[in-house]
Image (tube, rainbow, N blue to C red):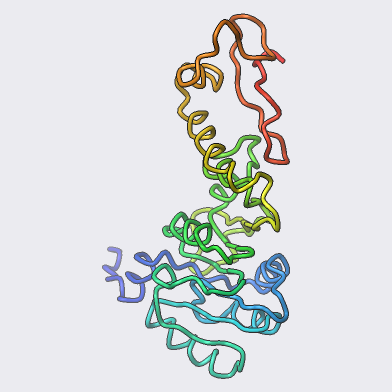
Length: 261
């Protein structure tokens, strides 16, 4: 029997373009809401609200909620959900084009995975953001949070001001349509007080940038290219050994460590 030639619908094409995987598992929804821990009197922005699966339980836990959804088809269903929730404002708009609120706020969302980096950049650039709880691809959440035992450049550069944490794993079967991989709950929290003085942050970021260039096989070799020490050598290391930076869980460098240590 010859296979049927099934043409994709506009809805199917929209899902692919918008990377839409709706979270349908109630336990997973409850878990994400618990991790987000909304302020009962504060402002919350929901990214990619879809059909309102997260909107209802989030609205029950926060003071005010603004739900963003760019897809018109899902937006019509979301509008009906929001109409019954007095503390929720529905915005049929692109979250990435929105101006950050001038007051303290938090972000929660089962975000389109193809836009993960853009959403994270938006959150980091928002000066009044307190936290972001994002459902991302598990691989992304693990890399950003240092779950592999090493940290990405973005994580290290922002660490004095922002904490990154992998707050859980959501199996791919919790979504419809089912994606190819599991998801991770990525928690980003702005520190009440930065770990470094504001005046020191530009120099710190330059240091991190130099370290991640990787020229010379180690951070020590990279720094020597830019800041050659007169008649000295880096601490902690045997002559001729390979040196790498060791970043502690506090986000501060604990010194250069040779690979044999």
